[in-house]
Length: 462
Image (cartoon, rainbow, N blue to C red; front, side, top):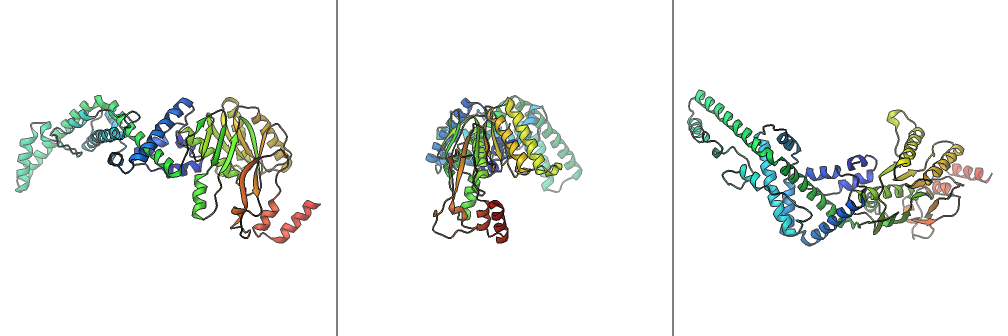
């Protein structure tokens, strides 16, 4: 599965990509085409390269070789179409020949800058001098492409006569004849050059892809430095110290709200998360999912320390995902999704994230469904995180609880605007089958109708 498919189910990762500073469309395309890597050795190699790139950016960010490399990448065109035409032996036009010449020159410039940065081993570029020389027969050294007279001996006298006629308002019939002859010769030159360039198709494709990868690697490095991301370790479980949700953290900072990183450890089998409303359970699911995608596409992660278990994929059922366009109710869409998750996990080792399953159906059947989901997924090798409000769930599974409201965490009045400061989002082991009962308290804090809250309390007491 490619990253462009995963971002459809993870808005948090889309936020990551939107904050990456790509110099070219080719770099962004390279990112979206990145495979969700399921091989630990390949991830280690990519993290090694990223680590080297990060140290290089730290050292050379404002030095000439790094500036030259970035400038070269900014001029890079994503000429996949042109290279496809070349591979199919299609005659290239002058614009396409310019693109080839530009790629050849940028490759040479980037190679020189990369060598100056000491990155030649991790960002090797092919030698494109022969390609550039073919398209620059007069050795001008400039990027612009032109059908030079030196390409065909017929061009010099023809253009001399044509220029003389055009500057002296000469015979229009003769001018038309000469223009037609010139176009014919230029087409012959384009055909001949295209034929000669065909043998370098693979080399040029490699140059484009390596430059796109250089752009991607530098964008990863810049983001890692800006957000203080950490290199993960690979282990037999998933564990984050001070895990951050970048999207929410940025939002909170803009609103001058407190943001609290979270420590979490997940093992094969199932882990149930309970906690009050507004305690960040859904955010935790999304944070874990985003971090796993980042790790398995070769990025560092938003945590001070991380251990990642390499999984075959990520499957989710989160509350804001509905299939209304297909005419399904929220329950129908959810239960179909969970059924598909179970079937996937029968044959694959996945990271499973399920938020409040069966919350939209009646409590008796809902609890029974959650119990069944827990029993099935707990017997599989996948790593599953489930949030729930149901109490009394049985089964030998790990249970964590968000600590939630803590009095005295802030010296300001408790209001809907300040409630964030009174919540402790950290997780604690929970051996109690019961879940927190704070819905009415939250409703009161939010200023909801007093009669409604009073009646609800009476019904509870009854």
